[in-house]
Image (cartoon, rainbow, N blue to C red; front, side):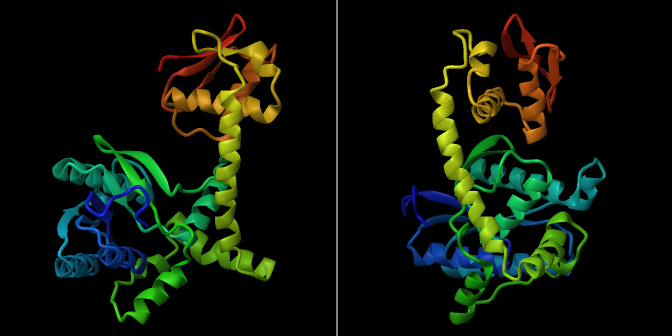
Length: 309
């Protein structure tokens, strides 16, 4: 819970009012954290219900002696400019957290994502062609608005049912979001339709199995990153040396390409994109690949490099 954070350090806590975030809020007090800024964004999606969430979080926060910071966002209005409900709501939260970080001069944010959220993330990422069983990280740096936040997720190995039991045993209250039962967004459909179907097929609860795959994937990535650093596939100018790249096992070739793209700030790196980029090393294929966010990966004279970024 407090790994890497001192009890006297300033931290932001993203609290929605749901059971998982309310456990986080109470635990921060129980563990002895002192300088906590509780950040609650009212998305304006459920009218009085959303206002009720805000009122509860504010009341409990004040009772615990923490600082309360509220924000509001017209998510449906923002969707008019393009983007799904989930994407726009996430961007609104990130912008809000970033502003809170600036206001309170605090670069650490604690969130209550749990093991069931992790399983949904892994499955959704796989459906979008992710490179491995990628989930959320327990500690991660994320650009939020104008600042980079260090994000902590202490509940990634804890099931939601355990969090709910913790609250019930202590007689503590939270808010249930009725919209979680509606299948109008991807995550809700995965949670309410896909996981029950997978459980019925497998005759077991598959959520912990899929969630655990993210931990195994993280260990594999550490090994891959260690190997990539020792592959010596870059020339003195920082370009990929094609001959050196082709001398590596296929999995390391993909790892070198991924590391190269990530260091170049390329977003949205998928398995399909890695295959397209890796094809540049083969004679007879096109000389360049267009990249997400603009720019290209180009091959010339035995070297692969980024341009237009």
